[in-house]
Image (tube, rainbow, N blue to C red; front, side, top):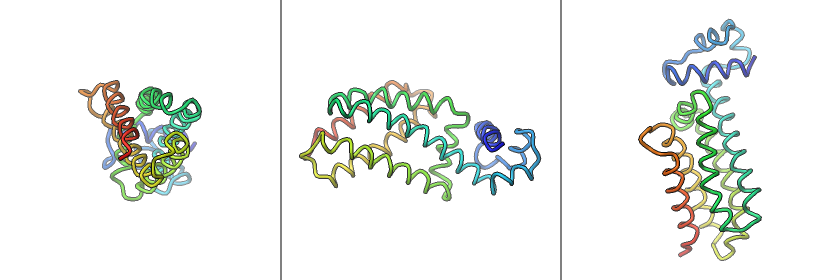
Length: 188
């Protein structure tokens, strides 16, 4: 039932946005009564938090797979596969109903900020662990800072590629990969 409510909430979020979505609408879309909604979620923000957590987990799984597959082959292989990792993240995110609105909520709703920040910190740490042996001359604090900036830029790039039809996802991925690679190669 929880998953059914989340699916209904994601669909509605894409249709009506954060401000207009209501628990009654979600319950109705899911074919249940409002009390059943409240057995699974405290309010619409609790539902949004569950949607945000699920979306970020699926995005992070793609990132972890990229790291596990590419980092052992070295820096060049990792960077070469960064483009495909980003494109896969955009494609997987686009397949989630209401994804752009979920991403907006993760940035805009104060109670959801912690979900986004915790996820970004976790992936920053994971990327740094993979990169440290590949760029041993880089100061660890500088590597962490550049990685954290790249994580936030990647999140913004995914949102931009989905939100702005004039942006080619391929061009967005290429540009961010080049920026990230340059930021790691320039160690001054």
